[in-house]
Length: 345
Image (cartoon, rainbow, N blue to C red; front, side, top):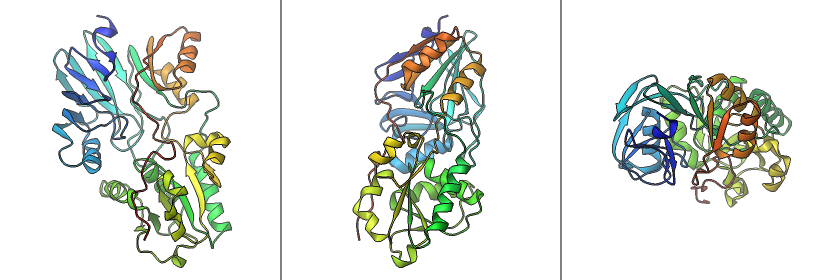
Protein backbone atom coordinates (compact mmCIF):
# COMPACT_ATOMS: atom_id res chain seq x y z
CA UNK A 1 0.00 0.00 0.00
CA UNK A 2 1.28 3.48 -0.92
CA UNK A 3 0.95 6.51 1.39
CA UNK A 4 -1.45 8.07 -1.14
CA UNK A 5 -3.76 5.09 -0.66
CA UNK A 6 -4.14 6.12 2.99
CA UNK A 7 -4.04 9.93 2.92
CA UNK A 8 -4.41 12.21 -0.06
CA UNK A 9 -4.30 16.02 -0.27
CA UNK A 10 -7.50 17.45 -1.77
CA UNK A 11 -8.96 20.98 -2.10
CA UNK A 12 -10.91 20.30 1.11
CA UNK A 13 -7.77 19.22 3.00
CA UNK A 14 -6.08 15.92 3.72
CA UNK A 15 -8.51 13.08 2.98
CA UNK A 16 -8.55 9.44 4.07
CA UNK A 17 -10.90 7.66 1.65
CA UNK A 18 -10.16 4.39 3.42
CA UNK A 19 -11.56 5.71 6.69
CA UNK A 20 -14.05 8.19 5.28
CA UNK A 21 -12.65 11.31 6.97
CA UNK A 22 -10.64 14.50 6.47
CA UNK A 23 -7.97 15.95 8.77
CA UNK A 24 -8.42 19.69 9.52
CA UNK A 25 -10.61 20.20 6.43
CA UNK A 26 -10.80 23.69 4.98
CA UNK A 27 -14.51 23.36 4.18
CA UNK A 28 -17.45 21.44 5.72
CA UNK A 29 -17.20 17.65 5.28
CA UNK A 30 -19.10 14.61 6.52
CA UNK A 31 -16.46 13.53 9.07
CA UNK A 32 -13.58 15.69 10.33
CA UNK A 33 -10.64 14.86 12.58
CA UNK A 34 -9.41 18.12 14.14
CA UNK A 35 -5.87 18.62 15.45
CA UNK A 36 -6.61 21.77 17.49
CA UNK A 37 -9.10 24.59 17.90
CA UNK A 38 -7.44 27.45 16.00
CA UNK A 39 -9.87 28.74 13.41
CA UNK A 40 -7.75 27.86 10.36
CA UNK A 41 -7.78 24.19 11.42
CA UNK A 42 -11.13 23.91 13.23
CA UNK A 43 -14.15 25.08 11.31
CA UNK A 44 -17.85 24.80 12.06
CA UNK A 45 -20.39 22.95 9.92
CA UNK A 46 -18.98 19.41 9.73
CA UNK A 47 -21.29 16.42 9.94
CA UNK A 48 -19.18 14.85 12.71
CA UNK A 49 -16.01 15.88 14.54
CA UNK A 50 -13.46 13.69 16.33
CA UNK A 51 -11.03 15.61 18.55
CA UNK A 52 -9.68 15.85 22.08
CA UNK A 53 -12.14 17.00 24.74
CA UNK A 54 -10.32 20.32 25.11
CA UNK A 55 -10.51 20.98 21.37
CA UNK A 56 -14.22 20.19 21.33
CA UNK A 57 -14.81 22.48 24.31
CA UNK A 58 -12.86 25.32 22.73
CA UNK A 59 -14.70 24.92 19.44
CA UNK A 60 -17.95 25.09 21.38
CA UNK A 61 -16.82 28.34 23.05
CA UNK A 62 -15.92 29.85 19.70
CA UNK A 63 -18.72 28.56 17.46
CA UNK A 64 -21.61 27.69 19.78
CA UNK A 65 -23.17 24.45 20.98
CA UNK A 66 -24.15 23.16 17.54
CA UNK A 67 -20.88 23.68 15.69
CA UNK A 68 -21.11 20.15 14.22
CA UNK A 69 -23.77 17.51 13.71
CA UNK A 70 -22.05 15.12 16.13
CA UNK A 71 -18.96 15.31 18.35
CA UNK A 72 -16.76 12.55 19.77
CA UNK A 73 -13.89 13.04 22.20
CA UNK A 74 -10.70 11.00 22.03
CA UNK A 75 -7.89 10.80 24.59
CA UNK A 76 -4.18 11.00 23.88
CA UNK A 77 -2.92 7.51 23.09
CA UNK A 78 -6.40 6.17 22.39
CA UNK A 79 -6.94 4.38 19.06
CA UNK A 80 -10.11 4.32 16.99
CA UNK A 81 -10.77 2.17 13.93
CA UNK A 82 -12.37 4.06 11.06
CA UNK A 83 -13.02 1.89 8.04
CA UNK A 84 -9.74 0.22 7.23
CA UNK A 85 -7.60 2.76 9.11
CA UNK A 86 -6.56 3.01 12.76
CA UNK A 87 -6.38 6.55 14.13
CA UNK A 88 -4.45 7.61 17.26
CA UNK A 89 -4.09 11.10 18.75
CA UNK A 90 -0.76 12.23 20.30
CA UNK A 91 0.16 15.53 22.02
CA UNK A 92 1.44 18.25 19.69
CA UNK A 93 2.55 20.81 22.30
CA UNK A 94 0.94 23.67 20.37
CA UNK A 95 -2.01 24.75 22.54
CA UNK A 96 -4.33 23.11 25.07
CA UNK A 97 -5.80 19.95 23.53
CA UNK A 98 -3.66 20.08 20.39
CA UNK A 99 -2.84 16.74 18.80
CA UNK A 100 -0.88 15.03 16.09
CA UNK A 101 -2.98 12.44 14.29
CA UNK A 102 -1.40 9.10 13.41
CA UNK A 103 -3.18 7.11 10.71
CA UNK A 104 -2.10 3.47 10.28
CA UNK A 105 -3.16 0.98 7.62
CA UNK A 106 -1.54 -2.21 6.31
CA UNK A 107 1.54 -1.62 8.49
CA UNK A 108 2.15 1.91 7.16
CA UNK A 109 1.93 4.84 9.58
CA UNK A 110 1.42 8.47 8.55
CA UNK A 111 1.50 11.22 11.18
CA UNK A 112 -0.21 14.55 10.49
CA UNK A 113 1.38 17.01 12.90
CA UNK A 114 -1.09 19.86 12.73
CA UNK A 115 0.72 22.79 14.35
CA UNK A 116 3.35 21.86 16.92
CA UNK A 117 6.30 23.01 19.01
CA UNK A 118 8.98 21.01 20.75
CA UNK A 119 9.66 23.32 23.72
CA UNK A 120 8.17 23.35 27.22
CA UNK A 121 4.82 25.07 27.70
CA UNK A 122 3.07 25.08 31.09
CA UNK A 123 -0.36 25.40 29.46
CA UNK A 124 -0.49 22.19 27.39
CA UNK A 125 0.76 18.62 27.17
CA UNK A 126 4.32 18.41 25.75
CA UNK A 127 5.02 17.34 22.18
CA UNK A 128 5.35 13.57 21.78
CA UNK A 129 7.65 12.22 19.11
CA UNK A 130 5.83 9.57 17.07
CA UNK A 131 7.99 7.37 14.81
CA UNK A 132 6.38 7.01 11.40
CA UNK A 133 6.91 6.22 7.73
CA UNK A 134 5.47 9.51 6.45
CA UNK A 135 5.46 12.76 8.45
CA UNK A 136 3.15 15.62 7.46
CA UNK A 137 4.71 18.74 8.98
CA UNK A 138 3.69 22.35 9.24
CA UNK A 139 6.15 24.96 7.94
CA UNK A 140 5.02 28.27 9.47
CA UNK A 141 8.56 29.28 10.48
CA UNK A 142 10.50 27.07 8.08
CA UNK A 143 13.32 29.44 7.26
CA UNK A 144 16.76 29.42 8.94
CA UNK A 145 16.24 33.00 10.17
CA UNK A 146 13.51 31.84 12.53
CA UNK A 147 15.10 30.74 15.81
CA UNK A 148 12.73 31.59 18.62
CA UNK A 149 15.19 31.43 21.50
CA UNK A 150 14.21 31.52 25.15
CA UNK A 151 10.64 32.55 25.98
CA UNK A 152 11.60 33.17 29.61
CA UNK A 153 14.13 35.72 28.40
CA UNK A 154 11.43 37.53 26.43
CA UNK A 155 9.21 37.64 29.53
CA UNK A 156 12.16 39.09 31.47
CA UNK A 157 12.30 41.91 28.90
CA UNK A 158 8.61 42.61 29.47
CA UNK A 159 8.97 42.67 33.26
CA UNK A 160 12.03 44.92 33.02
CA UNK A 161 9.96 47.37 31.00
CA UNK A 162 7.11 47.23 33.53
CA UNK A 163 9.60 48.04 36.31
CA UNK A 164 11.21 50.84 34.26
CA UNK A 165 7.90 52.51 33.41
CA UNK A 166 5.64 52.14 36.48
CA UNK A 167 3.28 54.87 35.32
CA UNK A 168 2.55 53.26 31.96
CA UNK A 169 0.18 50.42 31.09
CA UNK A 170 1.75 47.56 29.14
CA UNK A 171 -0.52 46.09 26.46
CA UNK A 172 0.61 42.71 25.14
CA UNK A 173 -0.87 41.64 21.82
CA UNK A 174 -1.29 37.86 21.68
CA UNK A 175 -3.58 35.39 19.96
CA UNK A 176 -6.52 34.66 22.26
CA UNK A 177 -6.20 30.86 22.14
CA UNK A 178 -2.91 29.50 23.43
CA UNK A 179 -0.51 32.43 23.17
CA UNK A 180 -2.28 34.68 25.68
CA UNK A 181 -2.52 31.92 28.28
CA UNK A 182 1.10 30.91 27.75
CA UNK A 183 2.28 34.49 28.26
CA UNK A 184 0.27 34.71 31.48
CA UNK A 185 1.69 31.39 32.73
CA UNK A 186 5.24 32.52 31.88
CA UNK A 187 4.69 35.77 33.76
CA UNK A 188 3.60 33.75 36.81
CA UNK A 189 6.60 31.45 36.42
CA UNK A 190 8.84 34.55 36.46
CA UNK A 191 7.34 35.62 39.79
CA UNK A 192 4.90 38.29 38.60
CA UNK A 193 2.10 38.13 41.14
CA UNK A 194 0.00 41.20 40.35
CA UNK A 195 -3.43 40.89 38.72
CA UNK A 196 -3.27 40.51 34.94
CA UNK A 197 -5.94 42.25 32.92
CA UNK A 198 -7.81 40.78 29.97
CA UNK A 199 -9.40 42.32 26.91
CA UNK A 200 -12.98 41.11 26.51
CA UNK A 201 -12.02 38.85 23.58
CA UNK A 202 -9.62 36.98 25.90
CA UNK A 203 -11.93 36.29 28.80
CA UNK A 204 -13.89 33.13 27.99
CA UNK A 205 -10.97 31.09 26.64
CA UNK A 206 -8.64 32.19 29.44
CA UNK A 207 -11.24 31.31 32.07
CA UNK A 208 -11.59 27.91 30.40
CA UNK A 209 -7.85 27.33 30.69
CA UNK A 210 -8.00 28.22 34.38
CA UNK A 211 -10.95 25.85 34.80
CA UNK A 212 -8.82 23.04 33.34
CA UNK A 213 -6.28 23.52 36.12
CA UNK A 214 -3.80 25.79 34.34
CA UNK A 215 -2.34 28.11 37.02
CA UNK A 216 -2.86 31.66 35.75
CA UNK A 217 -3.23 33.57 39.01
CA UNK A 218 -5.58 36.51 39.50
CA UNK A 219 -7.22 37.69 36.28
CA UNK A 220 -9.33 40.83 35.87
CA UNK A 221 -11.42 42.22 33.05
CA UNK A 222 -10.32 45.57 31.63
CA UNK A 223 -13.96 46.46 31.17
CA UNK A 224 -15.01 48.87 33.92
CA UNK A 225 -11.50 49.35 35.34
CA UNK A 226 -10.45 52.87 36.39
CA UNK A 227 -7.93 54.39 33.99
CA UNK A 228 -5.57 55.60 36.71
CA UNK A 229 -5.62 52.16 38.35
CA UNK A 230 -4.26 50.60 35.15
CA UNK A 231 -0.89 52.36 35.49
CA UNK A 232 1.89 49.82 35.93
CA UNK A 233 -0.30 46.88 34.90
CA UNK A 234 -0.08 44.22 32.19
CA UNK A 235 -3.03 43.59 29.88
CA UNK A 236 -3.41 40.83 27.27
CA UNK A 237 -5.33 41.73 24.12
CA UNK A 238 -5.72 40.65 20.49
CA UNK A 239 -2.97 42.11 18.26
CA UNK A 240 -5.55 44.13 16.35
CA UNK A 241 -6.52 45.95 19.55
CA UNK A 242 -3.06 47.51 19.79
CA UNK A 243 -4.02 50.06 17.12
CA UNK A 244 -7.64 50.42 18.18
CA UNK A 245 -9.38 53.30 19.98
CA UNK A 246 -9.74 50.79 22.83
CA UNK A 247 -6.19 51.65 23.94
CA UNK A 248 -7.33 55.15 25.00
CA UNK A 249 -8.67 53.75 28.28
CA UNK A 250 -5.06 53.11 29.42
CA UNK A 251 -2.59 55.63 30.87
CA UNK A 252 0.28 56.18 28.38
CA UNK A 253 0.07 52.64 26.95
CA UNK A 254 3.24 50.82 25.86
CA UNK A 255 2.56 48.17 23.24
CA UNK A 256 4.15 44.72 23.03
CA UNK A 257 3.47 41.86 20.65
CA UNK A 258 4.21 38.20 21.46
CA UNK A 259 4.84 36.35 18.20
CA UNK A 260 7.44 34.36 16.34
CA UNK A 261 7.16 37.01 13.63
CA UNK A 262 8.78 39.54 15.98
CA UNK A 263 12.11 37.97 15.00
CA UNK A 264 11.68 40.15 11.89
CA UNK A 265 12.10 43.69 13.17
CA UNK A 266 10.35 45.11 10.11
CA UNK A 267 7.18 43.35 11.31
CA UNK A 268 7.41 45.10 14.68
CA UNK A 269 7.88 48.47 12.98
CA UNK A 270 5.02 47.72 10.59
CA UNK A 271 2.61 47.29 13.48
CA UNK A 272 4.08 50.11 15.58
CA UNK A 273 5.12 47.74 18.38
CA UNK A 274 7.43 49.29 20.98
CA UNK A 275 8.39 45.98 22.63
CA UNK A 276 8.58 42.96 20.31
CA UNK A 277 8.54 39.63 22.18
CA UNK A 278 9.74 36.59 20.22
CA UNK A 279 7.40 33.98 21.69
CA UNK A 280 5.86 31.42 19.34
CA UNK A 281 3.63 28.39 19.66
CA UNK A 282 5.12 26.93 16.47
CA UNK A 283 8.40 25.07 16.05
CA UNK A 284 11.23 27.19 14.67
CA UNK A 285 13.67 26.12 11.96
CA UNK A 286 15.77 24.09 14.38
CA UNK A 287 12.71 22.46 15.92
CA UNK A 288 11.20 21.57 12.56
CA UNK A 289 14.33 20.02 11.12
CA UNK A 290 15.20 18.17 14.33
CA UNK A 291 11.69 16.74 14.59
CA UNK A 292 11.65 15.59 10.97
CA UNK A 293 14.95 13.78 11.47
CA UNK A 294 13.84 12.21 14.75
CA UNK A 295 10.61 10.72 13.39
CA UNK A 296 12.61 8.37 11.17
CA UNK A 297 10.20 9.06 8.31
CA UNK A 298 11.59 8.51 4.84
CA UNK A 299 8.90 10.66 3.23
CA UNK A 300 7.94 14.18 4.31
CA UNK A 301 4.86 16.12 3.24
CA UNK A 302 5.02 19.86 3.97
CA UNK A 303 2.04 22.14 4.41
CA UNK A 304 1.00 25.71 5.33
CA UNK A 305 4.06 27.91 5.53
CA UNK A 306 7.51 28.13 3.98
CA UNK A 307 7.08 24.84 2.16
CA UNK A 308 9.82 25.17 -0.47
CA UNK A 309 12.66 25.81 1.98
CA UNK A 310 11.80 22.79 4.09
CA UNK A 311 11.33 20.56 1.04
CA UNK A 312 14.80 21.62 -0.15
CA UNK A 313 16.32 20.86 3.28
CA UNK A 314 14.76 17.39 3.21
CA UNK A 315 16.09 16.72 -0.26
CA UNK A 316 19.64 17.57 0.83
CA UNK A 317 19.26 14.91 3.55
CA UNK A 318 18.10 12.25 1.12
CA UNK A 319 14.46 12.41 2.19
CA UNK A 320 11.60 12.22 -0.28
CA UNK A 321 9.68 15.45 0.29
CA UNK A 322 6.81 17.29 -1.37
CA UNK A 323 4.74 20.43 -0.70
CA UNK A 324 1.00 19.81 -0.36
CA UNK A 325 -0.04 23.30 -1.54
CA UNK A 326 -3.36 23.20 0.33
CA UNK A 327 -5.05 26.61 0.38
CA UNK A 328 -6.95 27.69 3.47
CA UNK A 329 -4.53 27.50 6.39
CA UNK A 330 -3.78 30.91 7.83
CA UNK A 331 -1.36 32.23 10.38
CA UNK A 332 -2.62 32.62 13.92
CA UNK A 333 0.25 34.95 14.84
CA UNK A 334 -0.54 37.66 12.34
CA UNK A 335 -1.67 40.98 13.76
CA UNK A 336 -5.23 41.76 12.81
CA UNK A 337 -6.25 38.10 12.84
CA UNK A 338 -8.95 38.75 15.41
CA UNK A 339 -11.57 41.40 15.87
CA UNK A 340 -11.20 43.45 19.05
CA UNK A 341 -14.73 42.44 20.10
CA UNK A 342 -14.88 45.04 22.86
CA UNK A 343 -16.61 48.34 22.28
CA UNK A 344 -15.17 51.65 23.40
CA UNK A 345 -17.02 52.80 26.57
